[in-house]
Image 1: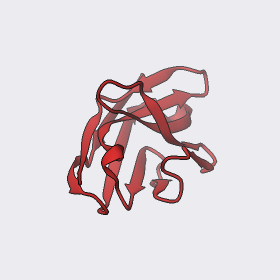
Image 2: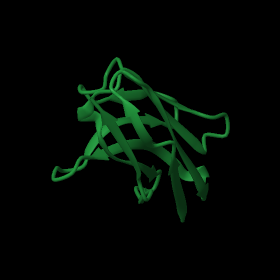
Image 3: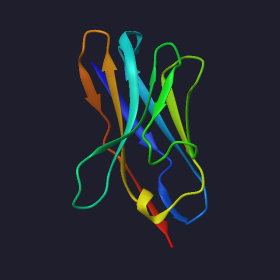
Image 4: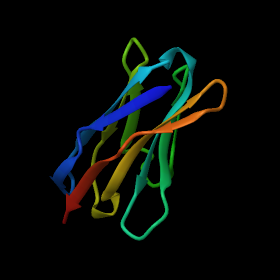
Length: 116
């Protein structure tokens, strides 16, 4: 079992920055991918970006160039640095973890609101 706790959300003005954190606990030695997803009101959850066990990252087109994923040395905490925030970045941001065995875990989410 893996538990995920997100933090760092809040209200920010357009053009500002936020840093989200996702702390994983439990059987973190089995981590394959860690990802951030987001869901705006009335829309489907969408991928923001992923980082794999080797540190390789990929980003959605909507955030590429404005988002940076990283992990700490223990690889149990993932960060999402978002710059040049836009109102359309508003939503609940969820951390997702997939183990080597293919099990998927989600965090509870953290709200990000970007005001224009």
